[in-house]
Length: 169
Figure 1 (cartoon, helix red, strand yellow):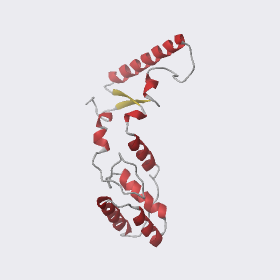
Figure 2 (cartoon, one colour):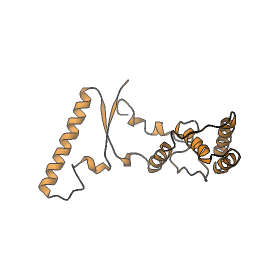
Figure 3 (spheres, one colour):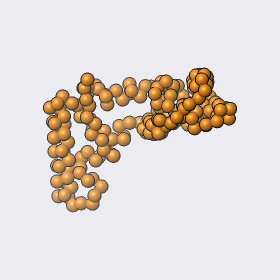
Figure 4 (cartoon, helix red, strand yellow):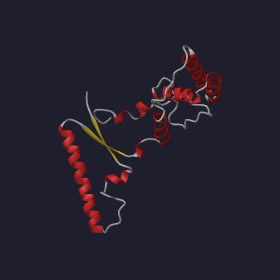
């Protein structure tokens, strides 16, 4: 096992200066830049001493659609899905067929919801299966239930594997 330390800021430029958004004079700005540089160096050295790699990350490091989709999918976690026996398997198979055929999943969700109720449970089921990688769709494109999901061509974990690697790739 190994660890990776993620130092995360709201913007890439936030790594270069302490309290970057504050209005300040040139001397204060210089001091804040020096403090930020020293703090980052200390953090890298501290973690490196324990054999832990440090990465400086900001939202720009990850594709906008991927960020939005993961944030959206995460909100569906823990959403209950308690269908009768066999319904889940049939539903999952139909949604998978829709993805492969390039048709939206919304009509399937609506059909199952009208027959068994609980529309949100069926929506949640679709999004949870994407989150848990049981339904592999393209996370680099927007996930819209009323539009076709594109089959996965790029695996997010492969695309961003350097964020999880023990050493830089």
